[in-house]
Amino acid sequence: MSPHILIDQALEGVATPFGAEDISLLVQALITRLFTDGAITTDEFNHYCKRLRDICLRRKEEA
Image (cartoon, rainbow, N blue to C red; front, top):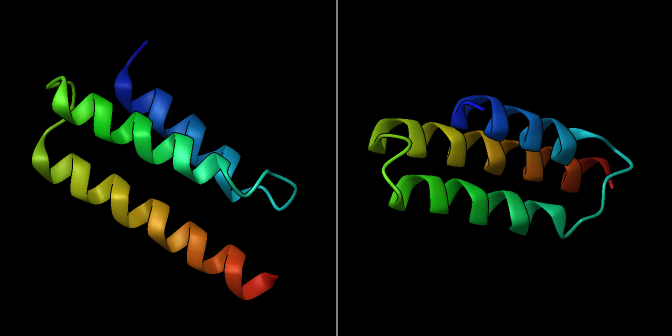
């Protein structure tokens, strides 16, 4: 499975309002691992980290 699909699915899980709060830590670890393994580029890493941060901020505001 493509690393991009894995990350997109994981980010969708974080974005759901009923998801566990600590899921974001798992997604962050997934993004980091895929980057260190060379599966995604630096630009992609930055993009996914920004998406994760934005989702977490949105969830925090909604809480």
